[in-house]
Amino acid sequence: DAKTTQPPSMDCAEGRAANLPCNHSTISGNEYVYWYRQIHSQGPQYIIHGLKNNETNEMASLIITEDRKSSTLILPHATLRDTAVYYCIVRANFGNEKLTFGTGTRLTIIP
Amino acid sequence: EAGVTQFPSHSVIEKGQTVTLRCDPISGHDNLYWYRRVMGKEIKFLLHFVKESKQDESGMPNNRFLAERTGGTYSTLKVQPAELEDSGVYFCASSRAGSHNEQFFGPGTRLTVL
Image (cartoon, rainbow over all chains, first blue to last red; front, side, top):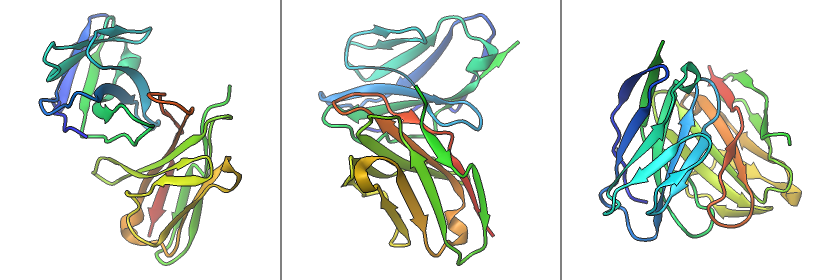
């Protein structure tokens, strides 16, 4: 699986949009971008995934650049409960392979 | 729908002892995964079951670790004998059959080896 690079930490004011970047310059054509998060003392939680088109669900939006070398996860109205470590993961599109977690971005929502 | 459950939530054992962790996946999920985070490190994959078969066990650290999933329902992960470096949080996840199905994680078992 391709390697991802994320900033180690970010702050965001409560109620504002949180934009979390991820670089995956070695991503191959059959690999998807996944985002998970881990809130303190809980198991990781799926957020969203995409291939090349932008995606949106009830939790977040995923913007993938046209060359697919980077992406941004957007939490439109961050709340204190969004404080967590966010992981950007690149994963092949066949089967149900393992997730390869990096160090992630520790997002802190400031009241 | 009940989520992934893991038992125990915490376990403290001495070096050389045996510990068995249990994971109950979401009902109907064919895929079951084990991951772990040891102190200060990233979450690492251990192995993947499809029903009762081991699909990928490339992450198992050594032969002190034995995972089973008899009958394709719950799974156990046994560590025998436990070593200090086995301390960490062990996560189980499950997903439905098919591609790109999200993995649902349990709350983890915190293992401390003294």
